[in-house]
Length: 397
Ligand SMILES: NC(=O)c1ccc[n+]([C@@H]2O[C@H](COP(=O)([O-])OP(=O)(O)OC[C@H]3O[C@@H](n4cnc5c(N)ncnc54)[C@H](OP(=O)(O)O)[C@@H]3O)[C@@H](O)[C@H]2O)c1
Image 1 (cartoon, helix red, strand yellow):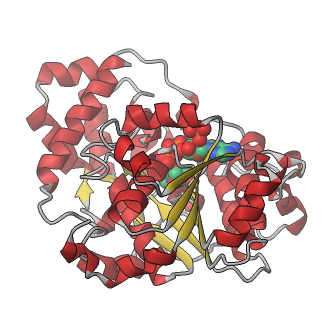
Image 2: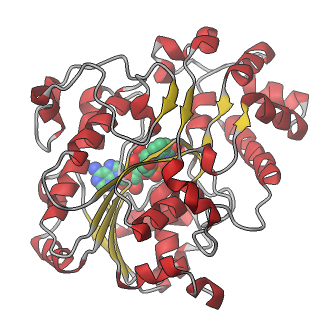
């Protein structure tokens, strides 16, 4: 951290923060860990890892090989082994007690982001886990904030138009009995699958939002709804981001696309993606600002582009034969697009949304280590490098 950075008011907020970070080995979690350990004066981070410390370190060595040593050497990170699906989160009584006396904020990025998992499994991984973590945090003595990562997909049942930063009711109305399926250990079969959501993941995430925001406890809750997340601009390193967590790569891996398909997709859709480090910065600024309720994190906070603009950039930085090589590769259409509104032949009929990001608009003016976009960032160059990265991924798969 440099001297000028220390003059930013939000930085001082971190001097007394002891943060429990769930999902620390994931895409957003890894970026948050880097920021908390190396770019902010955070007192301590409890990094919750699912399997073992060795497994976590191997993941970070592959996603941020040049940063992980410094993170570990910062002396700020304490690993805890736990699994949010297990009773007591799989944590020892001693570690729970220690955290109860120390933790000031919880950030939950743990999830199973698979879009093909069924509702029962998605409810367990994306809703029951969040409630279990929240329930444990409610017993902590000093916790001031609980931040939960949701997704813009929760509002996929809306018929298009403006999406506001607020909790929407479930499409079928309130059903308190079936909503009980979201609580830890409950029978997930009691919640019927609702295909007005694009994926079961979205339905499970929406239930988590409703249950968290309606909890009677006094811990302030912030729900962050990112759009599709893409490779980093700068932190922990340019283009950071595991491919498995980049939806646009996973989506393109589902199709064999002709030139006409590409044109049709590009004409009818904006390119809705936000760099992972912008997501992490926005989250940490909201923590410093103590924001509660719902906030969005979409391309409005970075750079809005039409699909046609992105396709035109792709054609500048990939040769026609490279384009043909990746997009015309024969791929078995994955279940990924299982809903009719996402069928390629009906792509021009899918709803379009305008995602409000009003509550984070002020963050565009912030400078220092949590500036939403680094000062020297060249978005067009980033897009070209990002497209080349996508090309390498698609070529290999
Ligand atoms: N990626 C996107 O484009 C996107 C878009 C919108 C919203 N989001 C949301 O943003 C958040 C972060 O996503 P991400 O892209 O960082 O996902 P990710 O890379 O798949 O990371 C998920 C993390 O959760 C951990 N985890 C999963 N189940 C767990 C359990 N039962 N107990 C403890 N840890 C568990 C994983 O641990 P392991 O390493 O052990 O697997 C991993 O660290 C999620 O809530 C996601 O729904 C993501």
